Length: 142
Image (cartoon, rainbow, N blue to C red; front, top):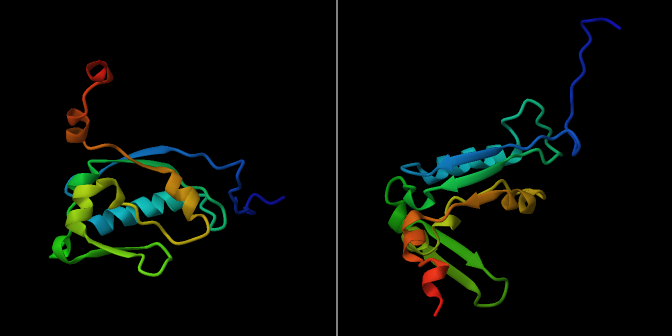
């Protein structure tokens, strides 16, 4: 065989190596942060990226409550959730969603059949002020 003959390596479930990444959301624009997270979840940062194989990595997002929106999106951007039932449409502006569930904001992925598995590989760390408000288990016992 000639030394000039190269073959393309395709990934499969046995050859995929998954790494862990920690992403800091402090002062990051939401859309740009989500685009970077989605690329790593799909595995596009790897040399052996194969579109039909799930070869993405695990991601931990810290300080998700400190992301920023450009322009007036904090007051104008509407997140819509629809249950599938008549009258089941719920709308919430970005400011209220960020206050109520900060881990839900950087949760935008590429829409594909592999999306549910990719969503399982994203973790959002609890904000530090929430952890301080919860009393330790030893203090809560009677």
